[in-house]
Length: 240
Image 1 (cartoon, rainbow, N blue to C red):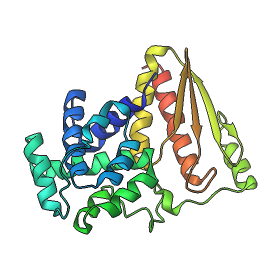
Image 2: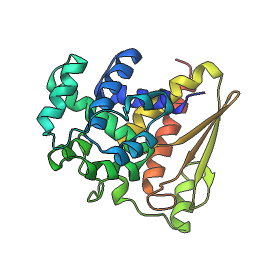
Image 3: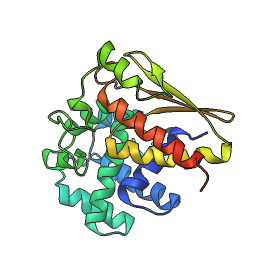
């Protein structure tokens, strides 16, 4: 079963183009250590909430508070610790923040206001505009809940899915050794759409569940991700 920790690191690896899981963990720790040092005690606690337990130790509660950092200084410190170029450190920082935002958007919004204003552009995902003003597909800030008629019509094109205006679900039965290839493809789609599916594994069955929390129900974003999940399952299940 793919854990929250594995999913967190996998998302960062895709976003920051890191090849090895070990590199992802080490680089992520560097980012978290530097970011948490710029926060006060309350915001550090909030930051820890948004992290998988396996990396919460990167939030050093007793580290001195270093307020007022410029973005270049913060990125430079991460680059120094990770032994990489500043642009790579900047991409890595944005990847970590984007993954945290998927798990706990309200917490990351709090962190955005807890860091110096010059640092906050790092919270904007590459290739997108900030969520609160976006109306583009793939940004929850522009999503709206679907009505019953809209959902009914959509489900005629999504034969493997069922649900209500609150949530969609789909099961896929595959050999267990094919689960990870499906999940890897789904993860790439999640990153592209800035939206996440809930996934559980029960023996040879993968169960996908979709909803858009920001609107309290199913949105067009869920339909887009449902189509991509169908494509991933079909691609892996079809013999080559």
